[in-house]
Amino acid sequence: MRKTVLFIAMSLDGYIAGSDGNVDWLAGQEADQDDMESYEEFIRDISTVIMGWNTYHQITTELSPENWMYSGLESYVVTHRNLPPTEEIRFTKEKVCDLVRRLRQEEGQGIWICGGADVVQQLVKEDLIDQYYISAIPTLLGGGIRLFGESNRELKLKLTGTKSYNGITDLIYERR
Image 1: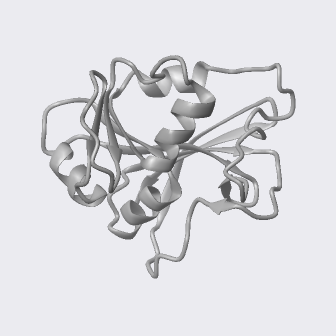
Image 2 (image 1 turned 45 degrees about the vertical axis):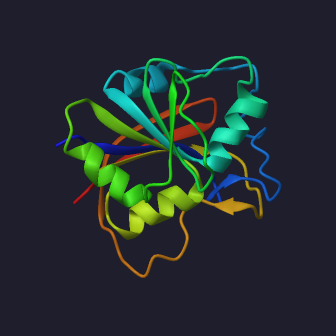
């Protein structure tokens, strides 16, 4: 069975974006210091990426409007919109939990849950995330889009790794 991995950045107070969707705080202490090693290690074992519409929209309009930044990965965007697939992206109305359950049974490497909060919260509620790879950014936003909402369920995790760079701490957890 394929592993489902949440790989995401979060402010120290638990937000993945400001209240206006802003993510310009993601760089860490020094904006010019970029450590791609964690991402490169992570992406080696991934063949599929799943995200919600808001994450997709932000990527294609702000972060990487010129080209699809996940080229080479099987890409799914969960949305209520009727959109035809592109060469690199499949838009789906399938419930994200059903999509993940289906993809886990297919051949391939890991499944990356890229965001956003609604997608993550649905998967957490159904305990469909095997590994949590969270980059804690040294910023307190004070409000915004919270990564983990109320789930009415306790999930016990085991810390399997950490890494610090540029004030950022990567925390890697797996289900116990």
